[in-house]
Amino acid sequence: MKKTYLTLSAVCAAFLLTACSMTPEEITTYMTSLEASYQNGVYEQAQTEMETLGKEYDKMTDEQKTKFDELKSSVEYAVSSSEAINDGLTKAQNFLDQKMYYEATQELENLTASYTMPPTEQKTFDEKKAAADNGIKAWNAASTMQEATQLLNSGDYNSASEKLAALDISSLSQEQQAEYQSLQTNINDAKTAAAEAKAAAEAKAKAEAERKANEGISASKARSIAADAMGMSVSSVTITDNGSYYSASGEEYMSDGFKDEAACKVDKKTGNVYDRVG
Image (cartoon, rainbow, N blue to C red):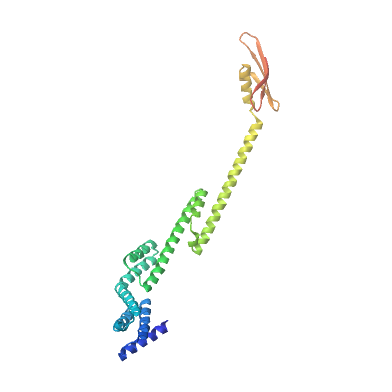
């Protein structure tokens, strides 16, 4: 492309030196050089070529005139706006260099709100916009993983998992992908350990409940139940463990000197009194 551009420039220079009028074919060739200068951001060269072509305007075909008018408008706009656009692009790059991605994005948005980018500046703009977008994604990813780590450390494993699941992993750098995988593993391991601990605690509680259910009421509780049933003081009742029930016997002297005796059985599981005597 560069060699062709130089050849076209040489042809055009020859036209200028000989002061010859251009044929329609030569005008097309020169216009191709003008368009290449514009597309490559060589606006001073494009202006010179445009001025030369302008002298041949009356000799152009209608199609060539339309093409020339479009290029003339584009070149004039590029010449008038390129300095301001490039100043904005430089400011955006300064923000990028400082990892101030939101500020860079704002600067670029201000540019698009004020100017239409010529091709060369548009390419530079697109590169800086992509860098700013990627920087914001990387910053957001780092922030999300930091929040997920804090939730993990606080024991809120489900919230940590949900926070990590919302992350767009396609935007992660290689280093962040490794961090993501490590964090994901740690969360899953913590959730598994917590589930196992919960299951173990529940199993232990169930076993203890079953043990207590099978063990039934204590001897002291049975003694108290028997005493109430026989209308005696607890100290007057004797308890004997007979496996599935307690045998209770009571002996107590009344105020008139008579001895009151009674006996009963107390079911270990229900505490029910039965087989009462006396």
